[in-house]
Image 1 (spheres, rainbow, N blue to C red):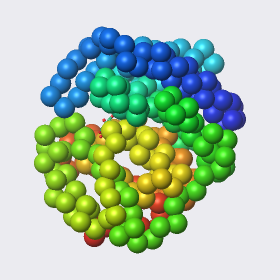
Image 2 (cartoon, protein in one colour):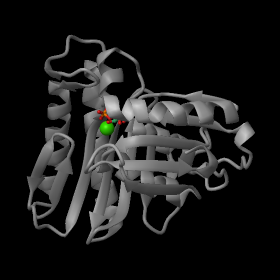
Image 3 (cartoon, rainbow, N blue to C red):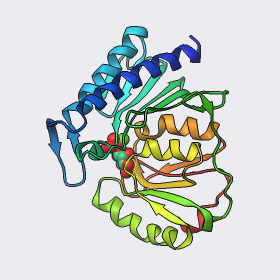
Length: 252
Ligand code: IPD
Ligand code: CA
């Protein structure tokens, strides 16, 4: 099976879930779980079910690993890494900055990725070995090389230990850059670096579904993506993503 057939199913699924999100933005939303630093919506589950159905209708033997649970063949060598709504808190508060993120791995290697922002109707897409695109046009990261020119986004994750661990780093970064931003969607942060809107992104605790598609899009556009096991949460990752030119090391 070619990566372009994987990509076309990823696009179909991302657009279908994005449409459902557009229809529900601003409506009364059923909340499954209200946590101190996070919210789980029934719509997260509905979007993941919709995406899963489209994937498994096309590829019944594949595995689907999502923020809202797993489906399909757990031993499948092709895995779909799905974040049905990245930016759920934004969604709940009516802030139109969230997206669908779908990455595809074959034998452990990322081969395709789609990020869809239903608010701006923006689709980032990539197949391994080809240039990533935004609404069909090839993208590259920014050409900025100096930290003093950079706009850098930081995520503060969803736990007290991640928030506390991020404060000192945030201070160092804020003092060095042009501006910091905190936007609330990891996938869109990576997509924005890939197309030159942002220059770097750092987050203390992140999960694979947040970043799988964005990583492939970013690396194909000339960026770098570094992950390490999180020092504050077993099973999560500490990540640093850049435009490939700015050195974030002195500020981490
Ligand atoms: C979250 C967003 C947020 C990031 C969190 C993620 P969710 O994903 O990407 O920007 O700071 O670490 O968990 O819960 O909205 O899918
Ligand atoms: Ca997410």
